[in-house]
Every structure is written in structure tokens, then in C-alpha cells.
Length: 117
Length: 113
Image 1 (cartoon, helix red, strand yellow):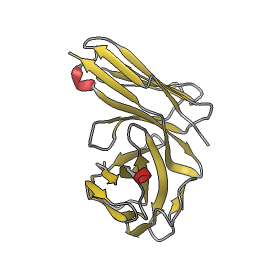
Image 2 (cartoon, each protein chain N blue to C red):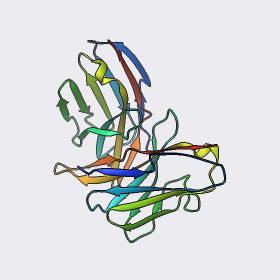
Image 3 (cartoon, chains in turn purple, red):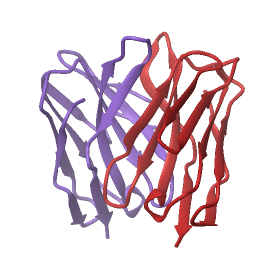
Image 4 (spheres, rainbow over the protein chains, first blue to last red):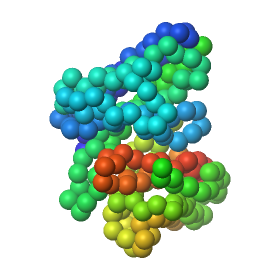
């Protein structure tokens, strides 16, 4: 398993500003993922962050709005840019590890609860 | 785009009752995972199933992966208040989508003492 921490755990921001969320893992991992969980809803994948390459974004998410950095194998950041109240969500990072019988397991950080006023 | 339909969305039961949560899709998944999430925390992995027809048990929880790997169920026997939480299924398509999870809508379970 992997231990994942996120900073900040929560924040209240004004519209039009930007917030950078940090994700730290206690081991080296190839792939890190960023998810959004809107109030009362399930998780939606924003992007996949691989070290040494550009992040890959899912449909509906763009780099200008959610720039991602992945400077090494244990760390990643997600920035929520030019925020609006619709960006109020929980943002979670996750990492994967292989299991011998096939497939993979993903471990999630505790999330960053963002409220945009 | 792969979709996972999870039902029911809400479940409120008394302690000691049994329950089943379902996840269904028209797409095949290489693996399917079940998570439990409590308020203010990230999802915690309960189990991963990878083989069609596979059944895994975790104490009072029984997980089944459909033969065609398109559906899964979570059955809880003799539910306890400590089982209260949000249960999520998530499927991985594999191939070029390796590592990317598609989540169901979630089931909010409340077990009353």
C-alpha cells in the first residue's frame, strides 16, 4: 500500500483566484491520478500525471484550467485556475500499484476540500 | 466512454439486516474495485476482483464479479452501524486506459442501531 498526503486539507477561496494542491506519496510511483468529487457525487478523473511527460487530461478538463506538475516520482501538484463557485469540490490524488493476480489497486489521498465564494 | 451504473443510490436499514449493492455496465472491465469512503476522507480500497465469476469475502462482505466482467455486487450480511458510509464501485478498462478508473455513482448506506 501507499501512504498519500495532500495539502491543504481544505481552503476557502475567492472567485478568480488560483489554488495549488500538493500530493506527496511515501514511495516512488509511475502514475499519479487527480480526481474531482463534487458535492454529493462520485469521483471523476481529471488527469493522469506521469513523471517526465505532460499530463493526460480527460474529456471536459483542460490544461489551462487544471495545470499539473509532476517533478519527481513521489510528488505532484494540481492547480485550479481562475476559480468559480462551480469548482467547489473535493480534489483527490491517487496512485496505483500492481497486484500479482492482475489489475491494479489504487490508493487515495485524504482529499482537499475546496470552497469557492 | 464506459459507464458504471450503481444502485441503489441510498440505503437505510436496521442493524442486523442484509443488503446488496449492484454495479452494472454494458462494457467489459479488466478489473473492478470496491471502495468505502467516510466524510472528510479519501476512498479506501476494500477489494479488487479481476476474474469473471470471482467471489471474494471480507468478513461479512461478499464481492462478486460477473462472468462477463461487466457487473459486480457487494453483499453485506448482518449490517452494523459501523458499516455506515459511501460505497463506490470502480472499473478499470485496461489497455490504453490502464490505471484509469470509472466510478459508479455511489451508494450511501446508513445502518441504524
